[in-house]
Length: 361
Image 1 (tube, rainbow, N blue to C red):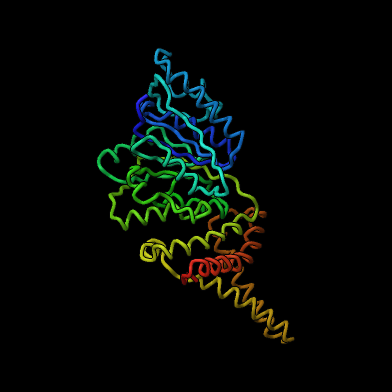
Image 2 (spheres, rainbow, N blue to C red):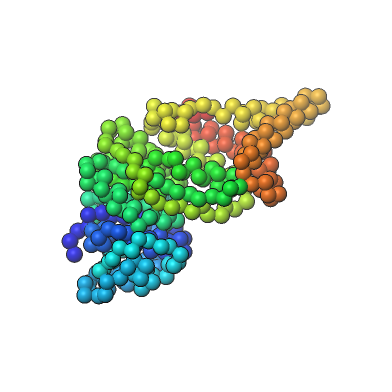
């Protein structure tokens, strides 16, 4: 086979069911399968993931090397080569064979998404690189829409991420849906490989799935590369159920916000602003006043401090519940986490500011 034009990079971590659905959607692209490959980079180094990808790879090989095989629609192809759900209904473009699917395992101690994506694109054969995630379902024309823009001379393309939620989402779902308006998230973006080589790809100092894609985007803006938004390049990103209290763990992201601000203060301020979370500081200050009053045996000061802390906490919880679910369990979660988030958020902001020697307080 000749080298493919496009390499699709899919990092994954022990989510075989979601990955199976993603691969089914990629196989069903209305783009000639000889022109693209799929590289699955397994950050979890999981046997189950390896087995799944090898199943896809071995099955699609039959169609790649036997062009006389019956012409199959994508729906038929999915049924023949994968175990994915049949609920996905792609366009009925005909395929005579299927794309190459490759597996890579991450070795060593760095299992970050940034590292996995770098391993993927650096091993890619294509001159164009497309990124999506293992919990995403690209629409059948997604690849074609992105490649069309790269063919026109653009260096980077970002598409639309759809995240359907109910009329009464949880606080986590409402926050996660912010991805819909984000730019150049790795759930849905395309780059020329030469551009990634020139910028050295993703900064692996970002150790979690947060801001590593924005950092690359900001570097491309600083280099004045040609970038474009293509709303027709659509990826569906279902929001997975989250554990109770998930917002507490989300506060760690403040650590990497400090790194992004250190690297790109102008673009960070332009895109996100750079205001201190005064309400958090007020909440913490009120709690400290209350504790100081208790320690000094001054009940009036203690009462004033704790009343102010309760006011700020209930105000915060009320804002989070304004347009979200009022299920009793969710209300309880909002009350508890609203009491703790200010302390955790400021803790991670301070850690990030100290680690990266930048004022991001």
